[in-house]
Amino acid sequence: MNKNFKKVIFTATLTACMAVMTTGVFGDSLLKYGSRGNSVTQLQTALKEKKFFTAKVTGYFGSVTKASVKRFQKANGLAVDGIAGNKTFAKLYAKNNEISSLKTTSSRGTSSATSQTKDDVYWLSRIINAEAGYEPYEGKLAVGNVILNRVESSKFPDTIKGVIFERYNNIPQFTPTANGAINKTPNSDSIKAAREVLEGKNVVEDSTYFFNPKKTKGEWIVKNKEYFKTIGSHAFYR
Image 1: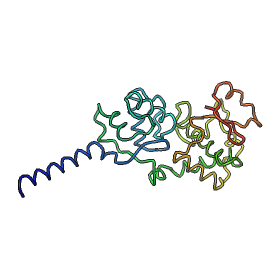
Image 2 (image 1 turned 120 degrees about the vertical axis):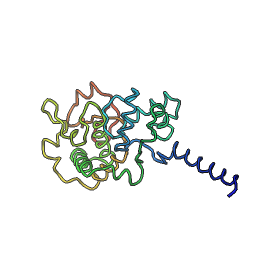
Image 3 (image 1 turned 120 degrees about the horizontal axis):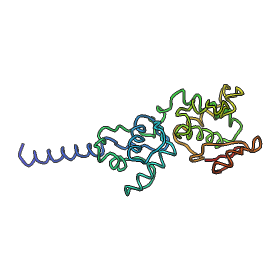
Image 4 (image 1 turned 45 degrees about the vertical axis):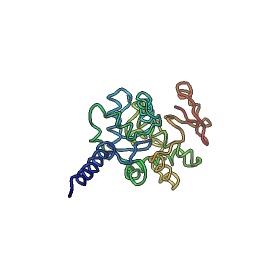
């Protein structure tokens, strides 16, 4: 083997190694709205350390995390899309050399499905069915969005079941947990909506409240929250 050929082989190998060092850790994976798991936990922790994320670290990439990523991207001269990809990771971990240890999980394809625990689908589909069983499909998605938005907010419990069964001054936040409707078997649309919401489908952005104006005035919500939109019988606020 001549020296020139060896040099070509060495150069090609070095180039490949450099590519792995800079981008291979992440591959084509992205962390975006709907992603869940340890990768999101690390992302939220890193953003929190840099003062861009102030909510609870939950391991769920919701509207709060998306807004935090956007703020970080804007502050660092990156494309502001709210999606954590290679360039965002490189900036975020550049100073502490943690880029090589981060293992991302794509929110696309089968990885999204595996992030859905049976417990999450079980309870989310039941509250969707209980609160929006007779609502249009978009209304079912919206109720699921509210639950996940609360999970990510520092003002509410950090699990789906915890949010659903939360009580404030001993008053249930969701009536179905008190009247037994939560125990009814969800229909197929409610289960489908729960899965889509867990995969990142969002129709009400960062809304964390909703009520039916025909059944209640929702005075506290109206006075203290911003109206977003009405879907079916429910008005959504954030």
